[in-house]
Length: 294
Image 1 (tube, rainbow, N blue to C red):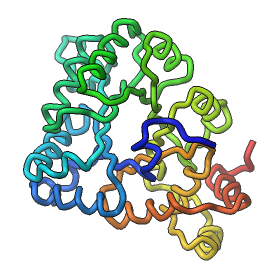
Image 2 (image 1 turned 90 degrees about the horizontal axis):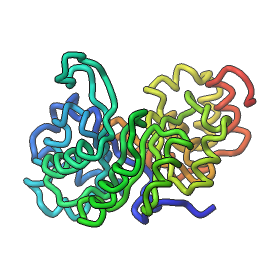
Image 3 (image 1 turned 90 degrees about the vertical axis):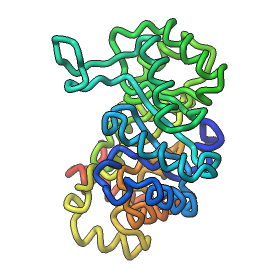
């Protein structure tokens, strides 16, 4: 099946997520982070996923300082960023509530702020981070179109949207939505059985699968003998097996890996290039879910 989305998403096996960058103090200096980015590029990983709420913007700032210190990297990396979530501690109103913001002015300012933090002229793809029940789709669509027309954004997409939510936004813009970033893993396969996968395939949205390793809890949910047999059959560790399981789906969803460890990223890359026997694919699903496929 022909995959959807811009060319750079068709070519990458994984997206590297920067949500946990603040936890890795060894990468906080511009030089160390630039070296880590270079290693990712050498391993064939060129797409990096950000959001304005990751570290309250500090993750983008650190990444931007690394790009500024090593300018040639700017032309090699592909950057995704997201906006639209206001966490409770970020709310400056008297209500102090977590909420969503997809107003035109807010999103326009968020795009500019991400560009400034990342020290780049363009985000390759910008996503609305969560569906906002107060969304005024025509106004948001105009802002997104202006961002693309000005060159600030290459492509637009959504994150955590359900089909009718992304279709409403799509109806209001002439630009294609190229992807939906939403949860998918052996531990969270529900979208494969409720029509979510088919909706993305039908509307030609590329699936960027967040939490593809189910928060690191998959090994304890796969029986030891099955894991041993699967590793012997495929040569993959549990990380590689989890990634291969996702990539085998129609449309080849792209896992967004939250780990920044080089060994974990390399294991995931090996899994992204592997094919699992159909029986093993279902055996892993049954083992993690505790019951046969519906």
